[in-house]
Picture 1: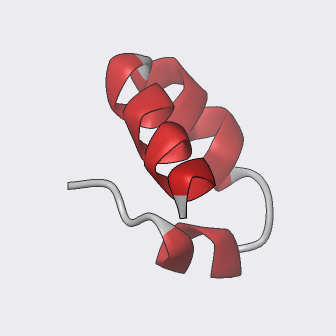
Picture 2: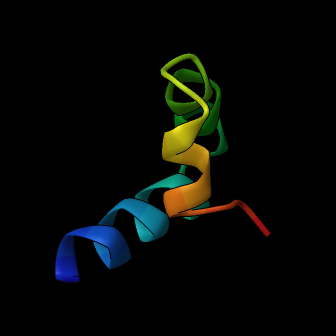
Length: 35
């Protein structure tokens, strides 16, 4: 679970990273939907 929290924190901290994360399959987005 800690991994998920870290990922969410990273995405929140760096909006640019969200773009890169969005490139991969959409299933990932379900793991940590951006607020």
